[in-house]
Every structure is written in structure tokens, then in C-alpha cells.
Length: 322
Image 1 (cartoon, rainbow, N blue to C red):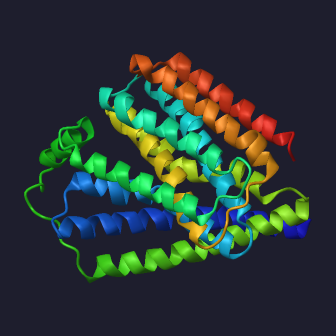
Image 2 (cartoon, rainbow, N blue to C red):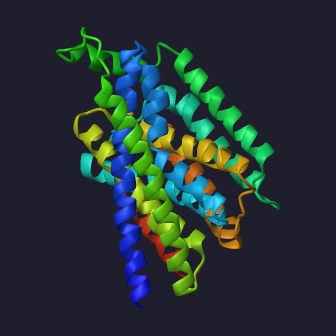
């Protein structure tokens, strides 16, 4: 019993440290990019979007190296479901109706559905292997390239407007030794916290006799979705609904392609029956449901309530797999 309590405490602390360190790393990388004159929009769809998936990415790489690759798919599936049901549900309920940008409906949402279908096809009867990782990273590269090349898209214009509104917009940010030191230190902390996180997951699952993927799909996914909850709610409150939806879409696409693609080069990603038979099908169904909900370019408060209820149902059904 003592071992479980200690492992749980380490899990909570390491997850919190991981999120804080990831945010610090992303902020430092963003400032360094701006100091080199890189467009804020380009930084937004690369460094910032990827930064939200950094906790999942690092912990997934370490999980594979430690022989617990089943954590990867559990983390990805759980995070994607949490983003679509929990994050957007809370944002819609708290902030009111969320209007969805036309470009997201025409481009990003179909890509989101395609990424979910890609995952379930890739692991249909086999582990997720390196050549599927190559396809995943190629798909992510195409998405990032397309997003960057579309200069007249709403998100690009919105970022430019926000930058122009800043009083110091004309002054190019500089990155001194402290910024580079923060980048290195935060990256080291990210790896250290991720290592402790993975070890605590393995210890908890061993002590309680449950699969590590179930802890990843529930507790880890919920914890790593908390920053998205805060960002999305604040965006809706500031009457920037496009950022709330874009935050979730970008995070899910990076999870599906980056967080699975990179670790697959370390070793094949095992897919337990609980993920293949329950987690992945639910993720695909939720993605399709989300696609249809947004066809009228609005997520209402009542629809947000339904999304939250579906998340509760998802977690309750996970309990039957324990």
C-alpha cells in the first residue's frame, strides 16, 4: 500500500513538473525563434503547437525505451479524446457558443478525421512500426507546410493582428544567454520528469495489477489536457473562438502524427486489446461526431454539455476494463 501511495505521489509531482517545464521550454524556443526573425505565425503552427504535445512525446519516447510502449497509444488516444470531449466541452459550457472558422471546417477537420482513421488502420492487426511512423511524420510535414503556405488563412491574420496590437510589436525580441539557458535547463527537466512519470506508471500498474495503457489513457491524458483547458477557456472568454478550436485540432494532429511517429523509430508500439477494442474505436467515433457537430460552424453550450457527459461515460467505461 505504501508503494502505491509513493508511486502515486511521484506520478502527480512528475506530471506537474513536466507540464511546467514544457511550457518554459516552449516559451524559450518561441522567443529564440522570434529573435531570428521567424514569423509569429510559423512559430505558432510549429513550436507552440508542437510544444503542447511535448509532454506526451518525451514520455512516449522514454516509455518505448523502457519496454512499456503500450503507454504511447494509450496516451495519444486518451489525450485526443480528452481534447475533443473535455477541453471543448468545458470551453463551450463556460464561454458560451463557440463559432468555428470556415477554413477549419474545410481543411483541418477533414485532416483530423483522416488522422484518426490512419491510426486505427495502422494498428488493425499489428503493432505501430517505423514505416508507419514515417507515414505519420510525412503527413504532419504536409499539414505544417500547407498551414504555413496559406498566408491568408484566418489564424495567420489573427496572429498578425495580435502582434500589431502589442505596444512593442515593432521591436524584434532578443534572446540572451538566460533564454538559451532556460531552453537547455527546461529540456533537461522535461526528460527527467518524463522518466519519473513513466517509472511511476509502471510501478502503479504493477502494484494494482492493471495495464499501464489504462493509466495513460485516463490519468496521464487528463493531466496533459489541463493546459489546453485553460488556453481554450481563456480564448473563448477573450472572444477568440478560433484559437480555442485550433488549439485542440493542432494538438490532436501533433499527437496522432508526431507522438506516434517519433517513438516508433525506437521500437514498435504495442497496442493492447483495451486500446484496439475500445480506445481507438471511441476516438474515431468521437472525431466523426465532432466533425458533424461543427458542420454548422458553431459549438453550442448544449452541445458542450453533451461532450462533457460523453467524456464521463468514456471514463466510466474505462473502469470496466480495470
